[in-house]
Length: 450
Image (tube, rainbow, N blue to C red; front, top):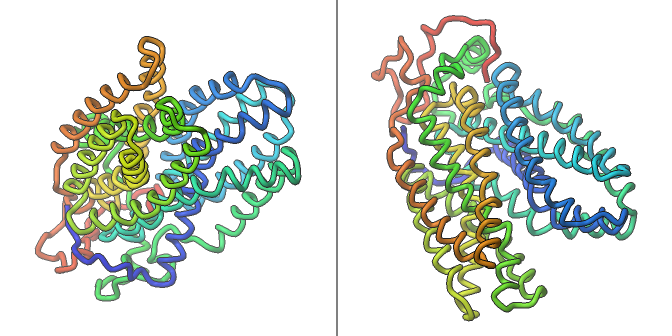
């Protein structure tokens, strides 16, 4: 795994434009799979008289539908590229949003929230990760640090924005407005985004010293067929270490954030203060996104990930302390700072181990497995609440899961096993800046490769 030490965000105008697009995709992912649940259940409960707890329970199977979306769209990206998936996903999700605003039964709510998870997880998470990998193979950590700020912006703004729309336009009209905006975004994406920097006429990492014939590279990338089939990946040790290791850390992250307000109220704070702490979490999520991305680029993904895991073990220790305002403030800072790190690191590690040219092939398997593990914290917290009446036991379990994740991540191979190790690659021909990949002996296939 080549480690870059240049931590300057000199991505160029096309690069920054692409990062902003990815930021919006991560915003979309967080909006429909997590943050939106704070407003949707309450709004539809008030509108139709449905039980809010029942509506919230539909989010558990919906998250598993999201795993299916990751499988479907991950495979589609390998075949058609991320641009196609982004356009199709945005338009399809826009149509679902419009329908969501006009549902009349709880069954329709369950179907709609499942479809929103299917599309948001399927393209909202996989597409930006693939595009960042393609555009910034050496600065992926730093680029992801900026792009994953979209999730922090979502936490800070989405609930307030939707609440404003619901109050002024009603649920039906509000969802129609949002749906139409997503459809328009899908159309705009066709003109805005390119699968690779070469297709936009610029160099990877905005590095003109990389001696590539852009047109020739495009031809070879489009003709390239990855040797990493699903069956081969399922036998690969590093695939399992990445998927399960980061899946464990993701589980803990979701478990902490999803019930943070509930935890604060349970230990004696009022709801107003708890929501203020959630806003503080969102602010430090933005700062943490950049911090973890910078650390990834500076130290390498593996070392940065292990530091990240240790920081969240300390965060859990803080959560187990009660009755101290200073500790609560520090906990909010710690929770927010780590919120976006996991999304950045699982993408960055997949890219580092499998390389720019085999990332999509590996990611179509890694992300669904990791997402399956990510869906488990609610079971752990539910059992903790059922048998102890509080979340402390769940936090102790989370510490154990974090330690397991640390061990798994520590065993990940640090050498790229993707395109750099294919037959015909000559390590003597790699330039000092690490951007010259020899693809001259690759067999020409019929699959489109990003």
